[in-house]
Length: 108
Image (spheres, rainbow, N blue to C red):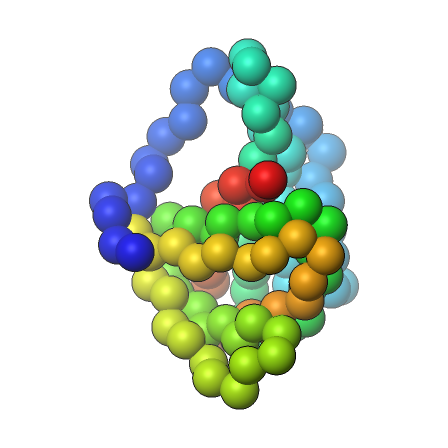
């Protein structure tokens, strides 16, 4: 699905301490909306990484691009700015990045 990438998020609380994963290849900050909805915003630097989800996630590409592969599939799928992909809860996915991939992760 392709849309205009989200450029700004207003009216949220931001966790100022970053979550740093994979030796700094993925860095994100948690944000909480007034209604309690939680998301994270971050960047993944060039690497191939494997993530495990708890809740379902929607990964929205804000800038850059990636290729992802969901568990149980063999196909790598490209996702660029303005596009998003869904990952089921309690699942695993691989992400391959060759340029900084800026994202918003929408949980649940």
